[in-house]
Image (cartoon, rainbow, N blue to C red; front, side, top):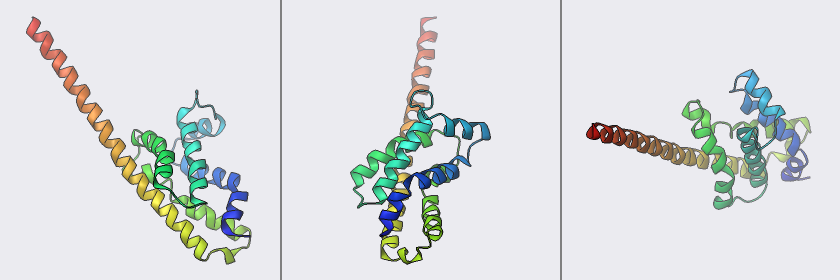
Length: 165
């Protein structure tokens, strides 16, 4: 059995462990809400995160297209860009995937799978993390532009009111 086959078989377990690691950055009540509420309407952030995680796992199990990876990761990074986390905390959720995959391989007593295929998979995870940082930077820039436009608009409205008086 190849590494990608093992990971495809264990995808649900990987997702659960990965979500647990990601949610460690949130308060306990938020963790419970994200775990229990899977609706895209009442929990859009959790839904977006889960969907992105599933897409990322699918992408690392096969050759990575930058366009596909960007389409998967961009909605997640838009959410992460406005969260109250330090910059490193916004993209570090990708890297624990390496540890989780290593744990799965050890549990299955398949250390023989940690050869070239592992190195390739590791490389794809790294590319996802770098792409995540680029997307985060783009999203933060967009947020800052919107904030500036909002301030300019409010300032213009105040000036307009003063001119009317």
